Length: 468
Image (tube, rainbow, N blue to C red; front, top):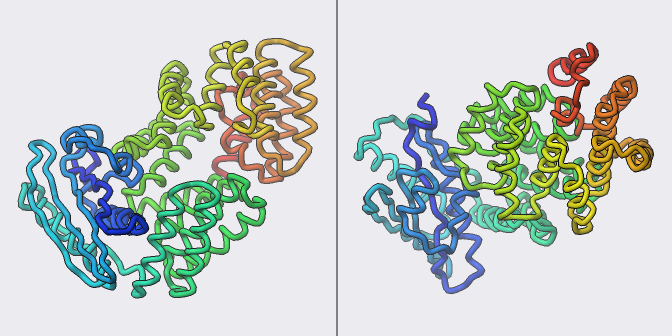
């Protein structure tokens, strides 16, 4: 298999909606996303992810500049026009080095033939790459028919359009649309995966009671698995469930491996694999997965966060801080970046600045246990005994709640910083039994200070990351 750096890279830019109605925007976005997924099934090309490609939606930027930003050799752009039940899809394949249009093609089809058009576009691209010196064989089908029901597929694209907006109103709409899709075709595995993804969003944001939302995530993931046991999205969901609801690192690792075996060009799965290796301290194995993710998703803030997190876990604190500051300049409300930046400031002993930032932060930006935990660690590290004791007492009280996973992990870190190792390991045993999943992230964090010198540390490390 060619490595990512040796494969030609293609970016599919968001197709423009030339229909008379703006309501067809979901369709132009949907056809773009499906073409990206189609081309991702080709082993010998690298396809820029949806998130990085859609960065350029509605932006008037020269093709050559886009190619440089995405490190892409080829760009596919196009448009969609819908009139009644007729489709006109136009596509242009451009070589970035000289902005030459290698081909332009137009497809006029009935609404029902949309999957056929995707297949034709994928085959045409592979043919043109061969003509331009890229030698590889296509021995697998570019796309499997997700459904034979054109109405179901249309609603599926509409559901994806709403889900990708990542807010309560649109995700609620997406859930309703996915449920309608399943009513039309109960063997549509991608619809169950989409529904599981939507409910996991509702669980992690707590827009729904987490227990209820996770239960629906599990139900829909297993329904998708029953239809297609090799579906990469199913294994990605199973990995998330293993990690966040079952506190099982090993099972999460196994499912991410399966997701990547079935679809190496899956950016979220590459990120997750890199993340899992970071947690267990295997940075040599984490790096190729991180580089792969950065190669196909270079503009996604989430991918760039993982790059910063990689340096943080390696204790390259200044490098991590530089990357986190860059993310926060673009989005001051990037919560993961805020949190890890706070950890960096503790390690750099910038306690006063950190305390001021956290105390003056907009209400609701951080969940209460996160804010309490960071302030507690900052005051403990600074040596302000009275304030630290008050915050620690409050954190201990909050951590009595069996579902207060953030409070559990911050209390563990607090005990480690205070060198109260007996308390730390006693707490650890309790929260492992509670399947308090945040401990998978926290246990080997650089903030644990000298806890690693205790002989019990290695025993629990093996138990948490390898013995499950």
